[in-house]
Amino acid sequence: MSDEIVRSGAGEPVARRAAGAPGRNSAEIRADIEAQREQLSHEVEALRGRVNELTDWRRQVREHRRELIIGAAAVGFVVGVRLMARRRRS
Image (cartoon, rainbow, N blue to C red; front, side, top):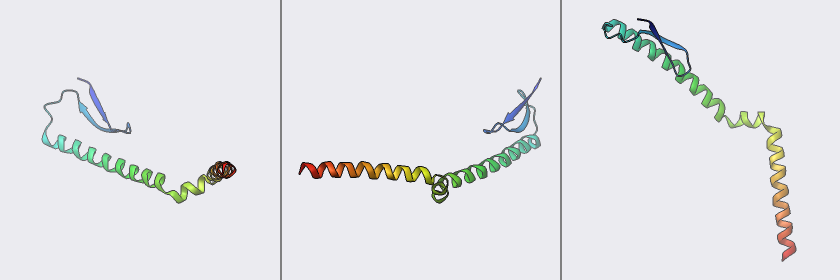
């Protein structure tokens, strides 16, 4: 029988399991569960960090200031044109 590597969602190896290994003892199963818990803990922390990074609006504004200014100018122009058109009609 060949060994099968169990991988996490990120593709990192978590545990090694013998293919079709019903003969594993409880210590091996517990060790596998503990290894998977540890890996899951690291993945959750990495995900929290990424979520915090993406939802930090102040950082997003700092990094995309130019795009925001261009967008605000475009919206201001469109609103100004519409107000002027409405004013001419009345």
